[in-house]
Length: 81
Image 1 (cartoon, one colour):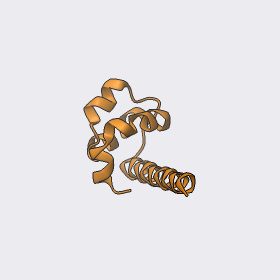
Image 2 (cartoon, rainbow, N blue to C red):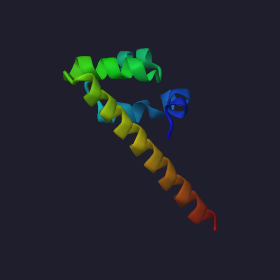
Image 3 (cartoon, rainbow, N blue to C red):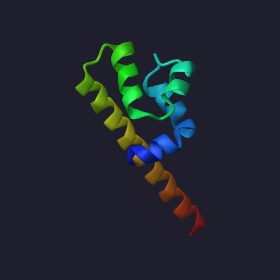
Image 4 (spheres, rainbow, N blue to C red):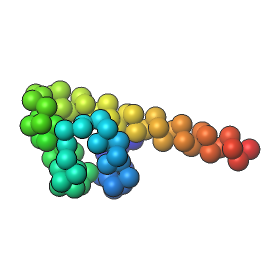
């Protein structure tokens, strides 16, 4: 899943972001509003990660969302057919 899709649907993904990065507050997630650069900065600040590590975390998050989306789509296809 590309980041534009995540940013455009950020409110749908805040629950998953909250699970992944429990140190981020609701205010943090609202301020981030799907902007990758701000998310990266918040992860660096809250977790003490270097920038490259925060970026790896975000890439992993995006990949997991893509896998979840694919599983849901597959499940919907099976239930229809």
